[in-house]
Image (cartoon, rainbow over all chains, first blue to last red; front, side):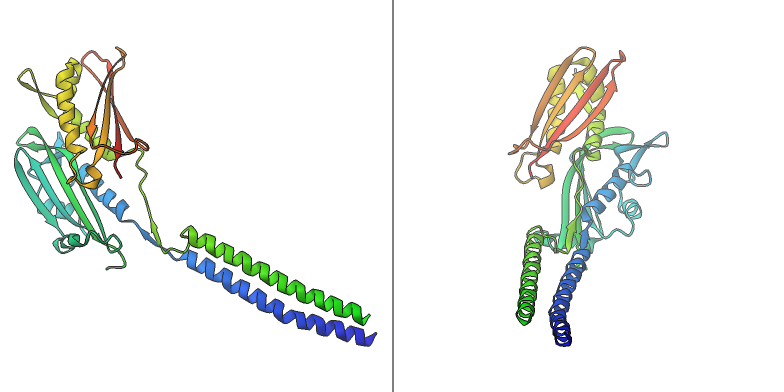
Length: 163
Length: 167
């Protein structure tokens, strides 16, 4: 009777070690999976550029024309379209931006954060640089008269890993 | 009794091997699926829902405010719409929207789009429809925008834009 009891105990002890080993492996694997899935880089460049563009087209403190002190979205006051105004409006942006305004055979170009904008030659490498170029149909107010034009906005931003 | 105990030990051994094999198999399958679904990629991208676009709404507002020539006089597009002069409306509309949605291959990717504009005179049950821009492969996922105005006679005119991006 005593012998059988000792045999059972030694057998249970013998099984305990492989069981602990397997529990350990499972624990490490689950921890690794959770740990890996929790780390992530979120690329918000598109949202940032969207917000900046909305500031340009809707903010009354940027380049919009005001009619009776009311800003009119989408109509640019040509007198406000200068580097100083745009720089104040988009201050501390991490984007390099080039604005090209074409209206009535006239062209006006403004560059912000030139050093970043110059990286646009690397736009082919989408892992390193975020680039967004688009032409917008806008109206220009010049000395009270409204003219149609195209505002080209070229945006470049170095991705987080590249900074 | 000894035989019974040996058998029990053997079963315990089998159980461990079987359970460990099952756990390893489940882990491998989970890892393969996770890898396939790009679960372990550290890069995540936030994509803006484009079913409605504030940029297109702005485009429609600028379209209505644009100056066009009608009978040798400069008027704004919303005034021209009330005249229902189809030829002049078509020329003005195509001129404006083809500047935004360009068909040239040198155009920026985001400007290579197909546009489809409908002008509905709600009280008269009349619709004008124009389209242009780049040729697109699929007409799925349009970006819809619309704007409603009233003419001099207080009648509603709805302008709806459907835009399809090439990408």
